[in-house]
Image (spheres, rainbow, N blue to C red):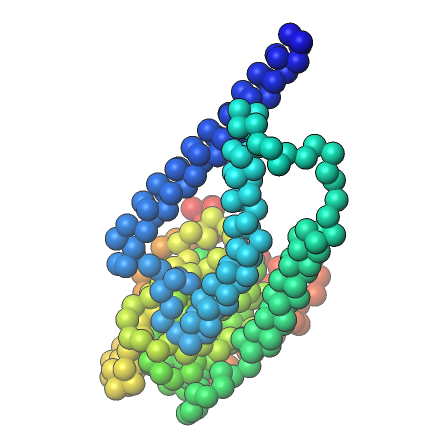
Length: 319
């Protein structure tokens, strides 16, 4: 009898501890949720503040997926707390059935509903994967896309506007409402990833390969672009502002850049291949023809144990 009483006391203590812990976790989660959401209107970035067509689709996909998963998650959380509280020994509920072990109805629910959710998620994912393929042009956008060739350098971004005959370093300007086609590669730096969170679609780039990405900005402003792939000492400094402006302002900006005396010659490009940190924006009024393709062919035609840019690889460390 004494042993039974001690066992009941221990069980009561354990169940009570679980209930108190659940209540504490719930209150902490609620507190941090309120803290996170306070004054959030002015601080939303990335996926939660889309400024492009692709980013809007990605946000909708995120919340659709979250809602489907909560169909399973929320009942589990609620039942975990409810059962621990309702069936504690101190309540002595009459409907407690220690010998009950099976129910076809309940098993059909907790196996069938997740299977249906997985099927729906798979269908949505398959559909959106094809709709948001970064290599495909965005449907419904009229006009000729603006071509921008992006080269990830150590540790800076070079943007070439071949149609306009200009180039920039760590600065990107694009017109609102016009589709932009990005050709992306890397030179003298490991694999990198091009990402403008508020416009959508992170995409990776490797040496000797051309990656393509299509984006459309639907609101003017200044957004952050960055490299999201760890690629060396200066990885954290590979940020660049993305200025989304009206088409008239875009033409005016191109005219201003063309007045610059700086030219992106082969010698200047070789200097850009040297590793550097936190480079300020630079602008070039003239560019070497077919520079982007030459960079790709440099790696495609390379053979032997030496890196094609081995003379430029370690100057930052030597300094």
